[in-house]
Image (cartoon, rainbow, N blue to C red; front, side, top):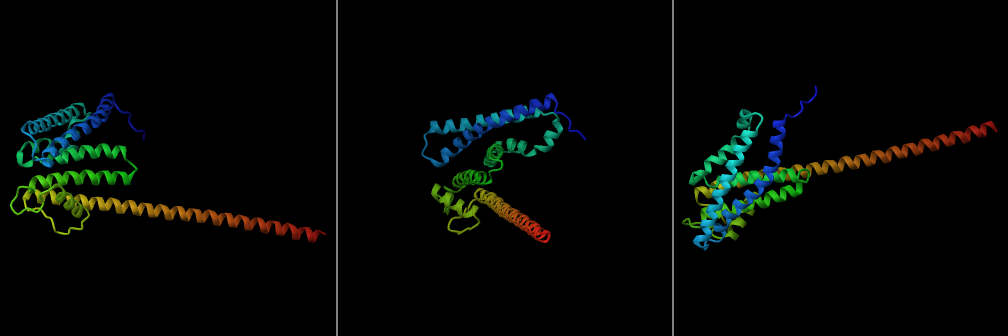
Length: 248
């Protein structure tokens, strides 16, 4: 059965999606910078804080416009809505102040989508980039939630980074732990990411080991075939010599 050729609308959607993904990375990076700057530097002036809030608002408008454009350009609107429910939820829910951190998930989704395309086949680079990105976002999120909480142990960015390192590697020393509900939600998400990354690393190592064994087996098989061919040639020559002696 032949594969149906893409329609003009599908071509337009694919072209827009490619350009949009590139621009979305810049928008996501701008949001992340505007989010992280007040968290890392709580002494920021009121003007800079206002600029950061304006940037986050503009990035939300950009994400909303991108979602609307994809919806309009999609060849099958109903299918798009059914297959992209998370995009809509991440666009609507963070409008509520208690769910503002969900914007991090949207930013990570955008950056991972583009990184996955660029680093496809380079598992080591992808895992390293994913770990750094997830770790930085989690450190900022937990620091924002914990810094002013009574009895909190995570009060500096260094504390947050150490907590991220022990959590994402599933070591969990317990010297730093979140005490707020938001911080614990971030911890659960980070634990799940740590398990997923560990699975990717384990799978990559297993694949590398199998490839090495397969390559080694192939080399051994090739060497064995060469030895058999050489032995067969020696037997042929010996038969020719014996036949020549018998003829003499």
